[in-house]
Image (tube, rainbow, N blue to C red; front, side, top):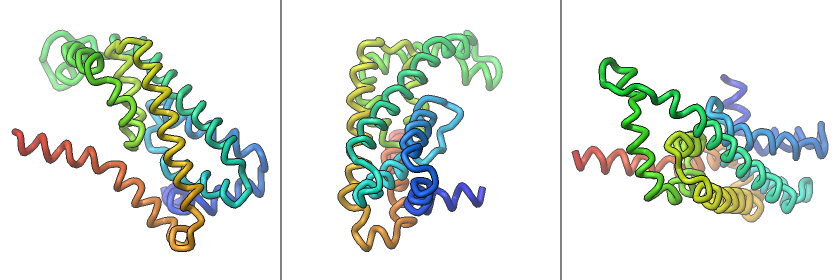
Length: 214
């Protein structure tokens, strides 16, 4: 756990060391991490936003090519969500199979929740797929739930591409433009924490709003 925390807080240093040690293989590593975070629902805690920012910052020094980083990681993000959606579409209906409300598990996995989710994703799913990209953990679950709720495939593909392009371009682009500004570079751990805090603010606002409405 201590290693993971250190890795997260010092991604810029760790990534530079990986480039020095493995060279161009780092592109494959970056692709794999982004793909796994977005494509495998069991890995929602990987540092997607911070990693993109660090990769962009490193590209600004000339160690990595910013265009390869952006194109490759957009492909990883889109492919990851597509796999997650496909798994959700095939596995979700089997998981959410309870048709009564007896017991906690039945309440949690009741198929009526899936029906409500389907209605939501048909109406608001595009915004959820795009905006969910920018929220840690949420971005791993949104495509799975969209698939489980049988969101129209063509609609998901369209917004998956838009979300993937925006997410990678914004995060890696910000790193490329600002990652090597002295105050940012010297306080990367604080910047990494700040990225997470800003990313989860929408969830906090929604929780507060829901509680006030209740």
